[in-house]
Image 1: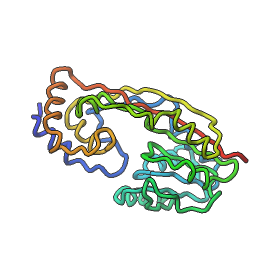
Image 2: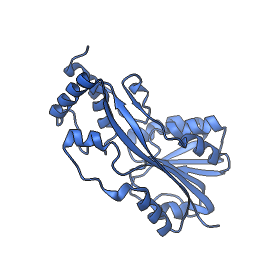
Image 3: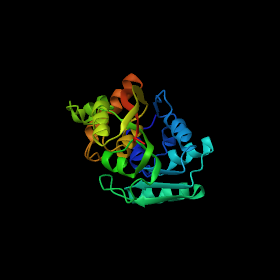
Length: 254
């Protein structure tokens, strides 16, 4: 069995660009939401002439959804705030004719009003509802899978001590913000999903990649909690927590 130091070195060395989680195979599992976001996005894209994906990461989810559905919007645009992800997204979306703009997550969108039939976003860190409403054409739709309040709180609390759970990411807050921006919510679903880690390398890599779980996380700063995690997994066989996800679809009145 690998030592703590070996596992931590491994988890600290894996590149974090993009949203390809294949490295976790055999080391961590996460239950998937019942609604199938990529499938829904692909279905919506088959009816869209002009599409925007906000905070696309490395473009992997968008590219896979379009290929699986056969959807080919005439105009495909995406935004991403982190330069390494933006460059990866350009490569992943090039064959689909997609363009990627580097835009801070809380900045206005660099597109004309009423430009898009469909706006999508998977796990956005910030949601600019008024900007989304502005760039949608009348009758257009916004489809998003979002991280809910208290996601993976068991992992956050293990690493940091008990933390308060803010309602800022709750589905109810999202609905209120969508309606305040002039959108009509057509669908809302939520689900708690089991996440299981089988070694501390997977925990370290996850916390480096999913930054909001433990804000400011570095391996050096959290060595002692990681040692406790290693001991817990050795004794229990895994560490279990629960991610919170919700799906929201909103339409701009025609």
